[in-house]
Amino acid sequence: MSKHYIRSVLSLSKAYMIRFFSDKTAMFFTFLFPLLFLFVFGSLNSGGSDISFRVALLNKSDSEFAQNFEQQATENETLDVNEDVGDLEEARDLMGRGELDSVLELPPEFGQIDESGVPSGSLVVYYSEASPQSGQTIAAVMEGVLDGINEELGHPEPPFDVEQRSTAVSGLSSFDYVFSGLLGFTILSLGIFGLANQMPAEKKTGAFRRLRAAPINSSHLIFANMVFYLSIGVLSLLMMLAAGILVFDFNMRGEWLDFSVMALLGIILMFGFGLAVGGWAKNDTQSSALSQVVALPMMFLSGVFFPRFLMPEWLQGITDWLPLTPIVDGLRLIMTEAKTVFDLGPEFAMIGIWTIVIYFVAVKVFRWE
Image (cartoon, rainbow, N blue to C red; front, side, top):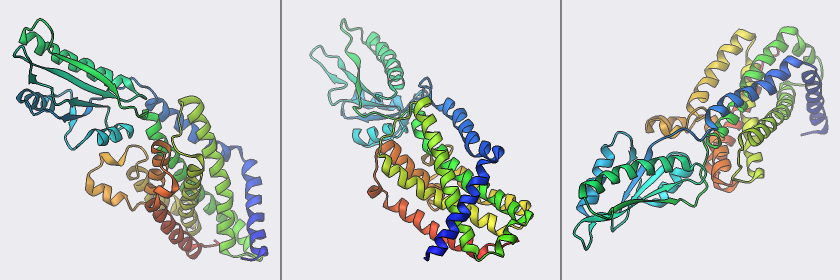
C-alpha cells in the first residue's frame, strides 16, 4: 500500500470529519440518540426490585422426605425450577450470567430422622452478592413453607429451617447483562443505517461523480469512509460507556484493552455492511429497504434486546452465524465474565471471516452514481 494511497484515504476521511462536525442534526442522531436509547433501556433494567423465581434445586439427600420435598418444589407455581443443573458450580455460573436468581440446596442430612424420631434439616438458599434481594425473597418463601411443615410435625423445637449463603461470586445486575447488547445495537445502527443513508445522498448531490474525476478509485472511497466512521463509532461508544458507568454504575469485569479490541473489530465489521449497502444503492429507497433486510435479523436474533439462551436451540444454532452475534457475545463475555481475547477464538474467527467477505463485496458492488 503506497504512501499516496494512504494520504488520499486520510485526506478524504478528514474532509468527512470536518463536514460531520458542522452538521448538528447528524451529530444529534449519531451521539445523543443512542444515549437516549441507553437511558430508556438502562432505566428499565437498572433496578434491583424485579423479583424472579428462576431457581436450581440441588438435592443431595437420599431421604424419602427430601425426595417428596423436591417433587413438591418442582410443581410449585411460584418457582421456575431449572432441572438441567447438575452441580453447585454450574448453578453459580448461571447465576453469574443472570440466568438464575437463586439456588436451593438440600444437604445430605436434610429430611433424615433425628433422635426424637422426626425428620429435620436446613434448606440452604444461595444468593448473588450483586443482587441479594431475589435470594432473600425466595428464602422468605421457603421459610413460610418450612414453618407450615414444622407446625404439622408439632415438635417443640422447629426441626426445619432456612440457611442463606452467598455464592461468593459477584453476580450481574440486569443492566450489566443488557449493556453489551445496547452497545451492539449502537454499532449496528451507526454502521448500517448511518452509512446506508449517507452514501446514496452523496450520489444524489453528485459528490461522488466529482470525486471520480480525482485520481482515486472505489477502494479509496470505501476505506476513507471506514476510517471516518470508525472515529465516530469510537466517540459514540465512549459516551455510552461514560453514561453506563456514571449513571447506571456499570462494573467492567474484564480488561479494557480486551474490550477495546473487540469493540474496534466490531465497528469495522458493521461499518462494512453499511458501506456495501450504501455503495450499491442508487437512491434512498433502495438503501432503506436493503438496510432493513440486513439489520433486522441481527437486531432481533443476535442477543441485542434479550439473551439468546431464551431462544429455542435450533434457532440459537442459526443465530451463531449472524455477524453481530460474535460481537455482542464477545463484548458480553469480556464485560461480565472477564474473558480475554485469548478466550474468544471462535468469536474473533467469525468476525474476521465476515470482515474479509463484506469489504470484498463492498468494493465490488460500489457504484459511483
